Length: 101
Length: 136
Length: 110
View: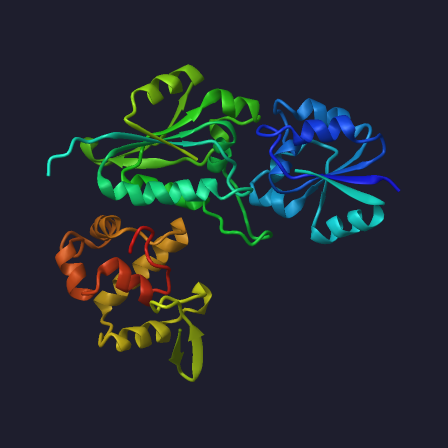
């Protein structure tokens, strides 16, 4: 099974998202958590790279972290929200987890 | 004691929940407000996320401190400079920020907006005017 | 530390402030005041309830200067001054009233 990549840093502050996207193999899963959920917002300077990634990866964002930051209405279409149980399911389904910090 | 009033600027560059900087900064500002200095806050880079509307921490269980920014006016902290370029890079505009206001003592307590949008170069000039800069 | 109210034990910190804000009720406020030899009058309650509303809205306990100004605006000049508030709460209006209101100590209060 594919790898689950998690990104927990803001894409505007660290290059974690950029390195994740350039490293992750097609077909792998990407999950944004904590400040990583800012990657999922529409109309930002990184949103085109996420839109491109949607064609190659299953992209998720952790819902509690999205609502905490007030981003629910501004998400890029095609990014699926998961709760904590969904996070566990993704981690269990994937063969391994790579955490981009 | 007749000490001169100094210009203090608190510079906020971090998103609100991933690290504790934003909350710490806000607490320092509220405590520092007791010293009657000329206080302003700057929000740039991910710091602009501190002021966004609609934050709801019910599902993560962390403290939602965004309502506290609305109390800054009561503490006479009413110059909140937000850098335009930082907002734009993040797909945000003034409408996405909480409408923060203060009551102007010198103008019959009229309610006025505290948030002032400034460009990167205007912010540079404002920083140049300060006596003390504190970065979070 | 803890306070006993109507047979229940409610946790407080070492200075007597509630550990969990959700534990608060009026009986607890009355019991806390009693420990300080203070009988809560309507005037006390006015300030306590004001503080609880302020916290609900802004998520902080206001500094005494802010409290005084805000009380003055809401309840009138004769109440929005430190003399009045210190008479009601001799241990410091923000500090003592916040305790009875089940709030944390005001930010910056030592």
